[in-house]
Every structure is written in structure tokens, then in C-alpha cells.
Amino acid sequence: MMYLLVRIFLLMGPLLANPSRDGRLTRDRLAKGQVVDTVFCKGSPDQSYALYLPANYSAEKTWPVVFIFEPGARGKLAVDIFKHAGEQFGSIIICSNNSSNEILLSECYRAAEAMFEDAFLRYQVDTSRLFVAGFSGGARVASSLALEDPGIKGVIACGAGMYHNRNTHTRIRENLRYYGIIGQRDMNLQDMIDTENRLAGSGTLSHFQYTGIGHVWPPPEEITAALAWLMVQVDNTDINARDFFLDYQAREIRSLEDQGHILDAAERLESVIAFSPDPELKSHLAGLQDSRMFKKQSRQRERAFRKGINLRNIYMNALAEFVCSTPLKPDTIHTDRWWTREIRILKRWENSENIESSRLASRLLYLMEAHFEEYIREFLKVKQRDKALFLADLWLKISPDQLWSLWNAAIVFTATGEKKNALVTIEKMVRSGKAEYEWFRDENGFESLSGEPGYMRLMKLLREQDNQ
Image (cartoon, rainbow, N blue to C red; front, side, top):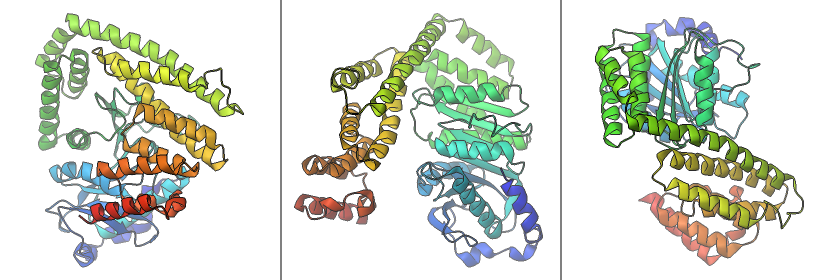
């Protein structure tokens, strides 16, 4: 992989050192202290990014930059999450509107290069504090860049670890700072654990934060703590960042203990001790680890992980058989009855008081949903609409009110000619207040509904919501 930042440093060295570029931001009239949805890259006008400049940004000094990769190319969404961190630590926040899970990795690198180059052209960049971040597939892109490119000083990987193709990453930089955040309900939990194990002993400075969330972006304060950790690793005299990190972690540990999540509290405390080996913290950790609840929850987690490996294999094998069978076999695991029973069991576990069983169920259900989406797209492409419809119906049994499942079901119902079901599903999306008119462009498969009065009414309502 090409060292993008190194190449940009070489190409733009004279410009970066030239004070005459001061004031470019003023001429571009980019707002400070608020999110800008779209900034087009000057050197690559087909590429753009969302932007947050700290409220006190000026061209009188250099600023750290966090370059973000969002799996759905939702630049504004990611920048909204990171802007608190940007303001807290005086950092420029930039997220590509082009890089996504839907394009090749090489195209993600091209989006990164355009973003990097434009940032150096427009803003006063502190080249000693350049960071990348991402979520899910975007985390893999960020990790891939960070593992190889010496110009990148650290990475915040959320919801997924690095690519584990050792032919891609035969060497891991020793001077990299790596901060991983993953939820215990995230389907990629084992992937992040594998990343932690791979980085252990590599010389990489790393911190892995295991939280209670699912496969979603972490909340802003968790992100801010991650950036604080990176700031300290780059400059250990940064007292502001150190204090923020420790204060945030102390609050989280107290909250976990208050909720009875002793194993989670102990794991978070252990990671804090690795950052700041305080004797009092070590004593507190020993007390937690000696408690009956810690031991009980450790046993529950171990059992859940063993069970999860077995069930994951069963479900992935069942899906593989489903994909390869033509036509569908009525008396096998391809039946709606078999899948419905399994989904019902998992949803019951998800609502149980055993937190580890609940988390396991969430991981498995989300794993199903992720594969349902992948296969639905493929089935529609090859006109296997019965299979697409089968998976859409199952998905709605898992998440009948979730926007992600409704969106995919609406696409399938429209493609299979089930207009009534399509309109019912779209109405649920519109009534949620979270859908956007732009989603229902003809290129997404909704042209066959354009003459339906019910569809026209829903699109009018959606436009009115967008304008509010």
C-alpha cells in the first residue's frame, strides 16, 4: 500500500512551510464551531468530506487532525459524533463522504488521499498529531492506513479491528498508537479481540475498550476519551488530555459497579491501570476480582463464548446451504419454521437477566441481519426473488421496527411486486421521523411505485418532514 501521507508531505513540503498560505480558511469562508456537511476537495472535485473546525480555529498555529472513514459515507453523522472531541482538544475533524463499504478498498484509499491533500492545502495542520478513525468497515480502512503509513500517529477503530490478511500487513509499525472500541453486543467482538491479541507484543501502543453497546458508533464522550488517550501517547505532558481520560474512566467504572457489572468494571479498571499504574487502583481491582459476582460473571461469559462459537457455526452453515439450494427445500433448515424458532429463542435470551446470554443473543441476531442484507442484494441481482423475500420476512421478525430492516424489506417488497407490503413498510419508515426523501430515488428500485397514490402521499409527507 502506498504511504499516502508521506507522499503528500514530499509533494507539498514547500507549500506546507510557506506562511503565505495563512488566511486561506478565511477566503474559503468555512464556518468555525459548527459542522459543515460538504467541502469539495480542490484537487479532486468528485470527492468531498464533512468538516468541523474548533470554534477558536485560526491560521496562527497548527492543529491536530482526525480523518474519519464511515461505512455508509455519512460524513456529517461521524463528524457530529467527533465534534465534542474536536472542541475539547482543539482538533480539526474531517470525514469522507465517499469512502464506504460499497466501494473497493483502492477507492477508499483514493478518497483518503483526496481528503489528506485537501486538508494540507486549506488548513494549518500539525503533522505530529495526525490521526485516523473509523467505524465497522471504515475502521478496517483506518486501521489499514494507520498500520502502514508512518505519517499517521494513531487510530481510533470502532466496531471492527484490522484486516487479518497477513499478506496485507506483514509488518506492524512499532510507533503506532491504536485505540480500539467495541461493544459486547457487537457481532465483530471476536474480531477486535483477535486484533488485540495480534498487537500484543508487537511494540504498538494500544488500548482496547470493551463497552456495552451493539454495532453502532460509540457515544461522543467515549470517542473524546479515545482522542485524549492518543493525545497523551503523542505528548505525555498533555495534562488536560490525561485528566479527561482518567476522569471519564472513573465515572464509567463507578457506573458499571453501581449497575452490578463487576466484570466490565474490572476490565475497564485494568485498562486504566495500564495507562496509569496507581497503587490504589490496583488494590481496587484486586478487590473486584476477588468478589463472588466477578467470578460468577466470568463463568457466564466463558459459557456464552463457547455457546456462541457453536451457534455461529450452525447459523452460518444454514445460510450457506440456503444460498446454494435451488429451489428452496421445504423440509430442512431452510424452512420459515426453523428460522423463526431460532430467532424466537435468541430474542428471549436477549431479554434475559443473564447479561452475557443477552449480549450473545444480540451478537448473533445482528450477525444474521448483516448477512441477510448481503444476500438480499445478491438475490435481487440474480432475480432469485423468493429467497430475497424469505430473508426480508425473517429480518422483520428480528427487528420489526428498525429502520435498517424496514429499508431492506421495502426494497424487496417493491422488487417482488408486493406493493401493499411495500407501502406499509415505507409508511412505518416515514412515521418514524428518521427516513429521508432522498432514499427513495428511482435508482434504489422504487420507480414501480411512482404512480401509486399511497406512495405519492408518503413522499409528500417525507418532503414536508425534510423541510422542517
